[in-house]
Structure formats: structure tokens, C-alpha cells
Amino acid sequence: MADARVPLSQRLRPYRVLLASRARAQMQYRASFVTDILGTVGVGLAEFAEVWVIFHNVELLGGLDFKAALLVFALSNLAFSLADMFVGHLDQLPVYIRAGQVDAFYVRPLPLLAQLMTSELSMRRIGRLSVAVVALVVALTTGAVAWSPATVVLIVLTVVSGTAIFAALFTAAGGLQFFLVDGSEFTNSFTYGGQYAAQQSQQVFPGPLRIFWTFVVPTAFVAYVPAVAILDLPGDSLAPPWLAWCTPLAALLAWGIAGLCWRLGTRHYQGAGG
Amino acid sequence: MLVRAGFRRHSTYRLALLAGMTTNSVFGFIRASILLAALTSANAAIGGYDKPTTIAFVWWGQALLGTVNLWGFSEVKDRVRSGDIAVDFLRPINPQLAYLAGDLGRAAINLLGRGLPALLLGALLFDMAWPPSAASWVVGAVSVALAVVVAFSGNFVINLLAFWLVEIRGITLLWMITGGLLCGLYLPVPWFPDWLRTIAQWSPFPSMLQNPIDILAGRVVGADIASAVAVQLFWATLLIVLGQVVLRAGRRRLEVQGG
Image (cartoon, rainbow over all chains, first blue to last red; front, side):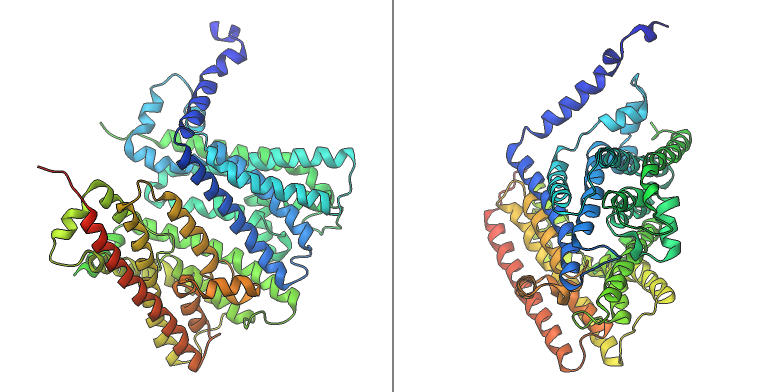
């Protein structure tokens, strides 16, 4: 058991080196990197424009005013762009599978999922991340936030758990890709679709759809449910304020299912042929 | 011939079509919920769209999303970069028309295999407005075809910029983001504030989606249908001619090494 005596920092070193090299590589072509960042800023702004244009026509949407909706938008976009930055490239798994690159990962002495996650760090997503951060700062400073130590804890908890939930969705999608390959777009319905649903007031959805986004694909926990508690809104039967504290639980459950999908997928995988 | 080849090429991947339809439907559900909530909150029609026509807006949009190539393509750019475009120049048919024919075939299979099932699902589950008259159906179909042509021709010009630029990713991104917002995929263009609507109306993007949807959803009727199609015709002609001009200029610039 020589492994057990190696300190954690030593064991994580390969990943750190990998990530740093990926980040450095992306910044080599300066102009291309800047363009990419501007591109993701544009994506973030376009997402924001969609929310803003609706509020240009109405005062309230799904029981939220513009400032409250901005908070929901910011929390979901922040969590999504963080998850996208770290594991969003799992989306490319069908490409790796077809090219036989997955086999190359298998022969290395590190776990497959950990290798795949650290094989890329999409620095360009910083653009969208910064749009989300600005939106969050504006929403928290101008909105009617019921500030207390508990609120601060809740906000941090929400961002961490929300990122974990989206990362779990990407990982579950990755596991399913081993079965789907050509049908890879199926999983977009709950990764990107989940992000689209997460940035809305959940009250816009009819009952069955709300239950789906709360208990099946738990993206309601990413932004709307915590926002109800942060802004001290009354909420309703499917989103009472205390439910906000269950966000880490939702993240844990999501990861349980993601782990299962990933195991099924990797067990199913037979190699790309020789 | 080329249209049929494009149709068959894209119909091979049936699972991909089904996957695309599923994803389009999920987004359709979410968008329909949001827009209906907005209409309930406004307690009136917004920009000429009441509830049934808004539902039609959402599902026609999802149905046409795969049909009209909004997100662009990179095939021509890649061929310019690798020099394979020279082979296209040697063929007895104009490269622009050849690629357009292939794209029309792609559009047809995507409309049948991916778009119409999503539309029917939407019509089953929501109270959706159908095109109000036979004229709306017929002109709507023409308008969809024109939308495919406008989107293709615009993207074709962007792809050809690869003759002069090493990397066109930035321009492609900018085209995609502005296009996505202004074409009327996320929200109807008539919902925009005045200044944004003016920008949209002076751009080719509404001709790629909003105009056919307006006709098919029945928001635009009577003589206005003619002007909606006329605008599309204008952009289709302009972009095709521009494509030809750029293609000629690029051809003069092209130097391919070979032996």
C-alpha cells in the first residue's frame, strides 16, 4: 500500500500539470483566444437579451419582477458556465469515441473520468462567466435581498451545488454517449435544455413540467428555489423557502445518478476496434 | 440530382434526426411555457401575437430550426482552406448552385424527419393556430424555401471570407449570435423594443425565420404577406449575387499548390 503514503497534493499533481498545460495552450494564439472570449460574452449577452426583451413587455413573469428574474438568470448562468468550463467538453465524447481517443485514455494509469475532465479546461467560457458575475453583482446589490450570514452561506452553497448539478448532468450525458453515439443530440435536451429551464421562474411551467425540473432533472434547485429564499419571497407549494437548503442534497442525488450512468456507459464500452 | 443527394446524405442518420426532434421538442415546451406566462402576465396580445399564434410561433420556430441552416456550416470554408475548392471550380456547375442544391435537400429531410413531427407534437399538446387560409399555406411554403436560400447564401458568403482570412471563427460567431437573436428564434421580432426591432428589420435575419413564421402562424395576412415575401426575395437575390461576386474575386486570388 505504498499509494496510501503518497500525500494528496502529490497524487493530484498530474491533473494540475495537465490543466495548466491545457490553459497555457489555449492562450498561445492570442487573437484567436480573445475572439473566443468575445464570442462567449456574446452568447451570455444574447441569453440576457432574451430575459430583458420579455420584461420590456411585461412587469412580472412567473411571479418575479425584473430584478428577481435577473438573480435567477445570474445564478443559473454562473453555475452553468462554471460546469461548462470544467466538464462541458464531455459533450465531445462521441468525437473522442469515434477517433479512438478514449482507448488512449484507458491505457494511462489514471481514472478515465478524471482524465477526461482534466483533458480540457475551456478558458474561453470565462466570457460567459463574466456576464453571469456582473449580472449577479447587479442583482444582489439592487434587489431586495434579505441580508444575513445565512444568506451569504446560501449564496455560496447555491453556486457550488448548482455547478455540481450541471456537472452531473454533463457526466450523465457523457455516460449515455457510449450507447448513443449518433444520437448524441438526445442528451442536449437535459443539459442545454436544463440550463434553459433553470434560468426561468419555475412558476411559468405547468405542474408536470415543474415536477420534472424539480425532482427528475433537478435544475430548479440551481437558481429559482434558492432565489426564493435569498429574496425572502413567499414561494409556493413546490418551492417553499426552506427547500433552498436542500440544494446540496439535490446535487448529491444528481451525482449518484450521473455516477451510475457513467459506470453503465464505461462497462458497455468495448473499444473502438484496432 | 444534387438536391436528392443532399436529402439522402442527411437521411442516413435516422437516430440523429430523432435525437434532434426530441431536443427541439423539449426546447419548444420550455419556450412555450415562458411565452404563455408572459402573455398571461400582460393579459393581452403582445406585438400582434395572442396565445394560439404564439404557440404557433414557438413550434414553427422549432420545426424550422433544423430546416433553415441558422447556425451555419463550415464545409465550404474547410474546402477553401484545404484547396479542395479548386476541384469544385473544375466541375461543370457553379459551386454556389451546387452547394445550394445540397442544402435544399438537407432542408427537406430535416423538415420532414425532424420538423414536422415536432410541430405535430406541439399541435397535439397545445392550442395552436394553424395557417388561416390556403394562401397562407402555399405562400408560407414558398417563404420557408426562401428562408433556406437566404440563410444558405448568407453563410456561403461568410464561408468564402476564408479566401482572405486565416481564421473566420470570430466572424462566424458574430454572425451566429446576432442572427440567433434577430431572426426571431427566441422571441418574436415584434416583441423587441423599437430600436432593436429597427436593427432587425434592416438585417437579413428575420427573412431566415420570422417572415415564414409570421405567415404560417397567421400574424401576417392579406397584402402584408406579399411584402413579407418580397423582403425575403430581395435578400435572397442580394446575397446570391454577393456570393457570386465574392466567389469570383476569391477564385482570382486562389493559388493551389499541387503536382
